[in-house]
Image (tube, rainbow, N blue to C red; front, side):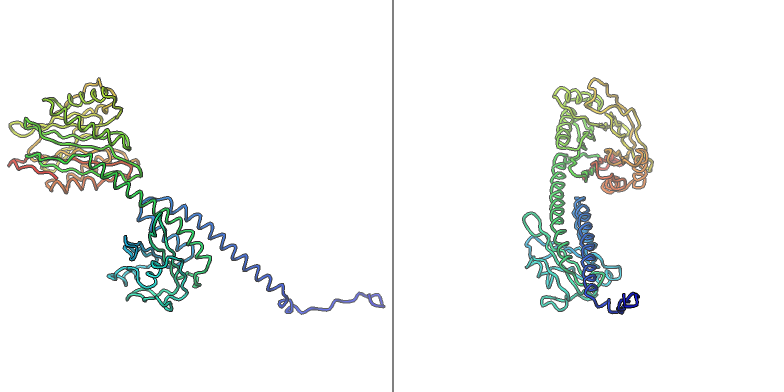
Length: 453
């Protein structure tokens, strides 16, 4: 208040001067810290999602590409690549680049993939994280091949497995134009640790898968000369993790000039199923040589032996016996819960030998197994297969059977190797079941000699 009792007015401070107060710089610093914190939180969330993503698959090529793509997404890189080291650990045996558009790929057509020279080689020799703000100015830069898109910045991190460095992850050029920073390096280093575990798991799975396939193939027979028949087989294991197949087949000639062909499928996808498959196949062959018996009688004896020896396996089977008659061949067959044989005639017609399928072996050993007969025209082809060829969980069985018959009709008269492979290729399963195809072609009118493959 002044002497007249009026209020004193506060001095006016220019608005512009507020901008020069220390508070302004403090707010800027806090804002920058908040932005950095938000970016770190996004990176952490992205890293967690990336870890789950690359750990969810066991297919090695898929894992490698997913590691590169995920790394690019985490730091906003335009280009990324993964270089796989060879056995010596000195050079790259495989290089997986991502981020190149179609034009850039065309420009690099015919260019040899990197082997690990220049900056790529530096990371091989010195497997510590590498951040380069300007590739062209780095003393170890070897430049780019003709047609290579320009790249300025680089972030490189080694990927280690259990006992060695598996390869190197390379990222180039953030989309925002900024160089890679310490946060980018930390995120990619963390991802590389997870990637090493995921890659090692995929490699181990591939080794187990190959060993399982080799074991499975060793249990299956190598068909002997079945002349005058021609024969061909295809077996493909399941691709699903941990699945050993129980599919089996066999074919052999008997002393009386007849030929026996059999195909079956032990229920289960484990080591016990594979072992049971080998035992059942061997027993059936021995029973077939033990004396003249129809396919139904042979299956009945096999069922009783399985019960008497304490076997608990359940298996489907189809046994066909080809007997010479005066004007061709008579086919006798009996079925134990197996898909029916398909007959491809020389004129291109194809038909399934529909009959009572019966029940699988290992269910009721007292059941009588009926026999069926079919007169084969000269040059006819009998196709036996397991359910993995025609069954898919998302489609009706009849569609698979129709597809198989249609494929066979298109390849009438073609070499058996081509027919057999096409039948296995045309209707692939979803990877959870193995498949087997056994094809026999009876002699034509000229009585051509048989062969096997």
